[in-house]
Each structure stands twice: as structure tokens, then as C-alpha cells.
Image 1 (cartoon, rainbow, N blue to C red):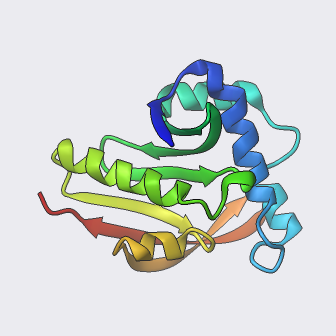
Image 2 (tube, rainbow, N blue to C red):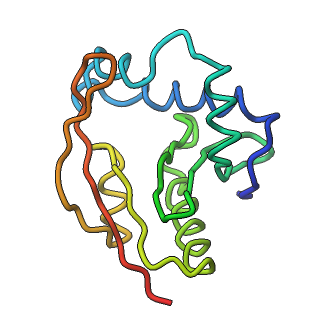
Length: 155
């Protein structure tokens, strides 16, 4: 596993990974309608390219293949953390989260926060993030649930 800084050559792969990751979630957790609202088709690659140039996610590669990505904003917000369906349950999300926690500490950040999906919530809890509240987010007219969570960092 190798974590690298974002490069625009990965833009399409990141967008595809996001779409596949969302659509691989068990329909008992998020319905097909919810997943389609969260990650609509067709993928808007132009919008993703603009977003990624601003967010500059960290990319986790396994044998030069994109396995996951995570975003850490300057204020400690983790905006996205997604793993390719073919690399799930292989420690990708754990490795990425450890990486951004260390990055945040090195930058002197005192707090990390995230709006975690139902699927991601257990990972953040494993890292001692505290759940503040459940949110109901509207995407394309459809309600999605997630959780506002945070962790205070020690130096």
C-alpha cells in the first residue's frame, strides 16, 4: 500500500471509485434510490475534476491501482473517504484514516470532524470519533442519513 498526493491523472478513476463504492453498499443499509441520489449516473466527470483540484485528496494505491481516497481539509474536516469495492476489508480505510490523523497532528490541528455514512460510522468509532448527532441530508430530493462525528487530537 502506498499513499500519494492527488494528481489530475487520477480524476476519472477517483470519480469511478466513488460511484462504484456507493453503489456496492448493501441495499438494506441504503436503498437503490438513496444510492442513485448520492452517486447519480451518468458520472459528471467535469464536476469531479473541479472538485478534486480543490480538495486534493490523498490516494491509496495497491500495486499502482487506486484502492481508495480520503480528503482532509485545512480546518480538520474529512469530507470524503471511499474504498473501491474490490479492495474492501483489506485495511484500506484504516490505513487512510491513520494517515490523515497523523497529517492533522503534524499540521497542529486540534480537532478532526466528519459526516460519516451509516457504513463508515463504525470505522470512525474504532478511531475514537464521538458521534454528536444523526443528520438527514437531502440529495436530489431523497433523504440520506449520516452522523456528525469528531475527535480531539493529542499532540
